Amino acid sequence: MLILVLDQISKWIVLNIVMVPPRTIPVFPSFNLTLVYNPGVSFGQMDWLGPWALSALALAISAALVVWMRKAETRLLAMALGIIIGGAIGNVVDRIRYKAVVDFLDFYIPGTGWPHWPAFNVADSAIVVGVGLIILDGLIAERAKNA
Image (cartoon, rainbow, N blue to C red; front, side):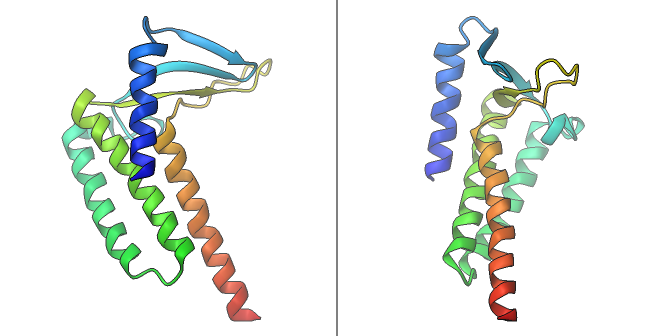
């Protein structure tokens, strides 16, 4: 729930205060605030499914993660799954409200000519952190099993 609230507050601030009018705001070298509406999932993929189908898919996956979370054998795994679910629901709220996900964190490597990494948001960050924690939980369990 905390992730969902933080995600939605950050998006409200960006949409109603920071990006009025919409523009790119350099924060420091390699990081901008840039408003992007992403109609798809990661890297804009699957945008052809539309917001309702993507929302239904995210809710179905979230429901499966809730089942897994209830059976989690460690607090770390349960926390990781909760973080992922919060991020997923945050993006579902966007799809329902805006027909796209609100992204605004824009990182890049200056002076390289490489394109900017696709913009993302707090929910996306939470999903990545949650997946990392699931991997960590698995590594800890494997190490304990082999000890």
